[in-house]
Length: 262
Image 1 (cartoon, rainbow, N blue to C red):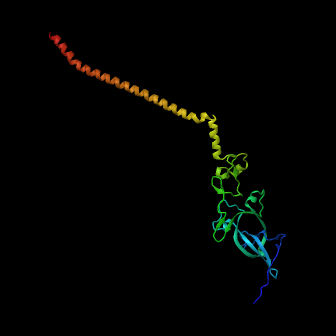
Image 2 (image 1 turned 90 degrees about the vertical axis):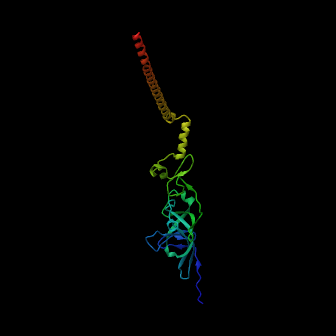
Image 3 (image 1 turned 60 degrees about the vertical axis):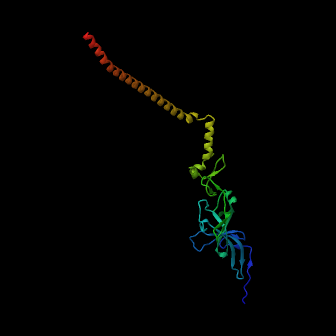
């Protein structure tokens, strides 16, 4: 039976061609087989060397959103990664450099995001495509999770956060803002100003004018109705008068004839 040489754990590995030294717990960029792809990101779990001093690293892979089963979503930041349950052993020679994968909270506090800065807020289960946690807080009218690489503005009243493009505002306009009220809060302000006596003429004058027009129209209709009724009564009176004349004329004619005979 052939005996295998034992491997030994080592504390660090110097990346060739650089001054960087990798230790267990560090995050590294690893060269992909396709040179056109972005480097893979991994967390070094252990470094070991064999008797020929061939160094291997045991790594835990980070996945980019587009590498996951669900794909990249709108709220995923360009520097976002998912820590996975996918472990592997790779040659240390494939390590290109070091990087820093921040927690979501720490990443949002960075004043300047450098090329080697990434962040992680989800654990990804590579076999099933599931995430942990599977729930996350949502913001804005669009009800999407927060993307720390996108500019958002906070309403001074309700303290909610909004994407500029969701409130009909450009990024340039948002950067120049000193104060911001969302639509709901600004509408509340308009209602309060109206109830305190402001803009009453603007609010109620159109209604008054509408009532006036309606009253004038009713008066015109009443006048027309009276005139029509008067004309009808007058016509009826003359009609009755004409009938009476027709009835009286034969009687008057007979009386005249009788008088002439006598």
